[in-house]
Image 1 (cartoon, rainbow, N blue to C red):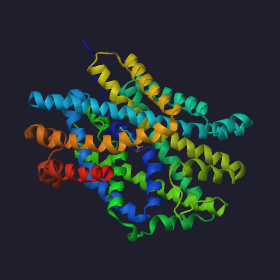
Image 2: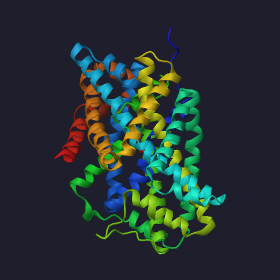
Image 3: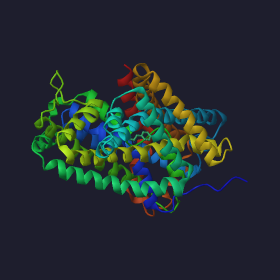
Image 4: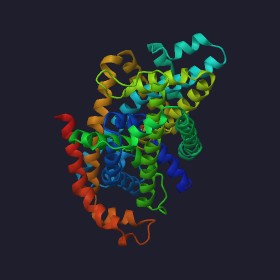
Amino acid sequence: MSAPRGQFSSNFGFLMAAAGSAVGLGNIWGFPTNVAANGGAAFVVIYLVLAFLLAYPVLMAELAIGRYARSNMVKALREISPGPVSRAAGTLTGLGGILVASLILSFYAIVAGWMVAHLADPVATLVGAKEAAAWMTGDSTARNFTFTAIFSGFTMLIIASGVEKGIERWSTLLMPSLILLLLLLIVYVLAQPGAFQGLEAYLIPDFSKLSPELLLSAMGQAFFSLSLGVGTMLIYGSYLSKQESLPRLGALVTLIDVGIAFTAGLLILPAMYVAQEAGTQIFSEAGDLIAGPGLILQVLPALFDSMGTTGLFVAIAFFALMSIASLTSSISMLEVPVAFSIESLGLKRKPATLMMGLIIFLISTVIIFNFDSLFGLVISISTEYGQPLLGVALCIFAGWIWRRDQLLMEMQEGHEGIENTLFWKIWPWYVRIVCPLLILAAFAQTVL
Ligand code: PFF
């Protein structure tokens, strides 16, 4: 007899866990960076539209498949497949999802480790450990290894405690803290000289920058941000009660995700201009706003440094925010291979967590020791190729392979009167045809 399956104890618990997965470095780092590089609010508008037109329908497919099958991605896709060929395709797609989730976690844990190191730095400075503080921000292999290990350890501890006591409890604790920290930081930064210019750069759209590339990078951003394609949302859906409305909860998760991305922009772009006012270079030689790691790891720390002792506390708040955002996302990634090991390989949760956590940490270690050649490559394979392709596969499973009546019945569960909604009229066709075509267009763009 296997142990009973975990389940979220309330819809609020699910909401915090799923929003926790969605809200991560992609929102607070990736989104504002993309905005900075792509014409301010023009990108914001496109992103908001795509999040609802493209990402939300795929999210619904994942949640529905997961809740219907009540199992991990491999088993779930097999279960909705009627014949041997589609079942084999289900196994392959499910294993692909587990692999890509693991790869994303392997680089994500390194970046999250930087966040924890930058959180520990001002703490060490405050207690007078100057050398330790310098080491923490020193960008060495030893530093990367140590903090990736610490971050991976936390992720494993939470996942080892299970769905309700681990994922749900920590997400309901951390997500409100994240929102509070974000708001406090915004209030502080907006009161600094130069902030207004940042708001202008963020909120006044420059539509001359609109291009097919911008459209497609907004699509990729939406996909990464909502944790789609790799079975994270599928497995969270599998822990959700049949009494909850999927379209409503999915819409809330999407709203929280885009809401926090948008709000993070109100922090990051003004902070950049405040940094400029304080003497930090925020434009590259080509005249673009500095994006990528330089923004979070150089521009903002330089700003905090210029603020004296107050800056230490602001730095602690900021990197605590980043670490929390990373942790609620990383646990959702680790849950994907762990749920598979429990349900399909017959392991118990603790050994499954230890085994999968260590394997992924090993991949992180290989990346850390071959940083220049592997880091970018793993990001590109997993997020530019893996996620969109798996997204297409999931749409095909939901739209073409899964029996229509079962799919529709799953949508009706917990949502009385769904038959009269626009969602009911549009979504089933939309996920079948429009979504795969749109994603394929994005994919073609990255490949060609
Ligand atoms: N959504 C996360 C972020 O925006 O940082 C990243 C992510 C989490 C991607 C979980 C994929 C995943 F399965």
